[in-house]
Length: 529
Image (tube, rainbow, N blue to C red; front, side, top):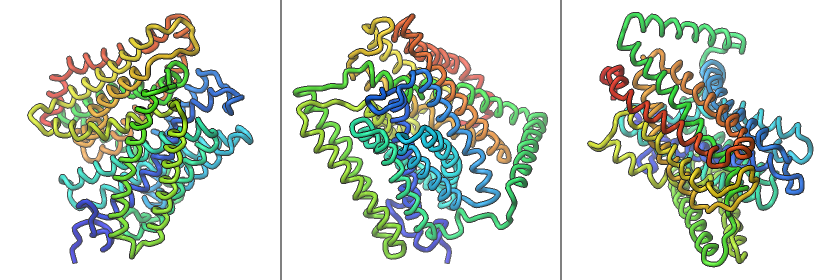
């Protein structure tokens, strides 16, 4: 019998028109992103918090540098995690091992009050675990579909929604509990749901049949490293040979290099979200609301939280209907995680309504990115499919310019902050608008870059070019932390407005250059659109 989708017979049962296995991966990825973004929302806030407030009282510069190195390394380890999965353990074992390492990492960080050793061990385990988990679960999504058409694209879109749902809930709940109850509780909560995600995947993995199993041949790690180095050398030789033989290939590889170069400018500024923008939210933003303002915020926050939870729970119910008889333990574990998350959500909302005022958590602003993506992604998708669809380089330029405008709004809102001020009370509106423009920029850049790498690179060089793209992201994230670490001396001598103008002018300038290069890059793509 010919199956429509890859995987087992149970995987042929559909949820929203897609194989059930997609939603096993959806919820696994959702809990992983919950844990990652939940921890990321707390990292800088915890490091700079005073000893009285349970933090480490680090200087902002040191906290932002650590943040930059951490988020940067998260983009390097997937290169090696993918190689290890390909050569040794297969996607499924790599996902389970990666999830286990990240669970242990969060547990270690939850012990941060005992000794700093546990904190750094936790970060190390999270970086290694992410490298094993991230590239391999995305690869499994692709193998569920037997064709490369619209169904597969739609499957990745649903998977991407799982990423944003997890990020949204992780920032909201881990951030709230970390700031309002205790840092180690926030770090620990992130690990709880990573653990549930690992278990529900492990006990449902037979739904994928042969997808993601270990390679038939076994090699030790030295052989893998040696083979990997040889492969990279061969790929580089192929690049040179292809470029010599074909002007078309050479031109397209140059375009990938140009896009990778300009993506550094985008993520360098965008990743201030977890660093300097979080500090701005914590110390320079008026987050205490009273009267009608407090009541309005509580209503909005309730709707923002409950509506996505209801939608995700509805999807969960449909998955149960198709898979419970075959994978009941996995379903029970997944259901238990949702019972816990609903209990936390209800507790948080009731706790907030019991207070006369509303003190918005500094980490709360991080949820806006995920919310705006969910709200505006359908609109952007329609524009890209219409006659108004701009070229790839113009999309990149728009993304950079929109990002710069977001920082320009913050620069304008900061004009009243005195030189060297450590605190201020700027309206939340400026930060909300900044996140809106940053997200609109992300919707122009993020889907475009990876798509063009896959289209422009010769088939046998796609892996190497994705590696180049990851390295560009590593550079951007690391530079984001290092640049953000200069916030205090810049604010001291030139003011907060000047600090944000740096992230306004450079992306907009890069965007203008991309517009100038548009026709040249289109010509060098040789028909790829």
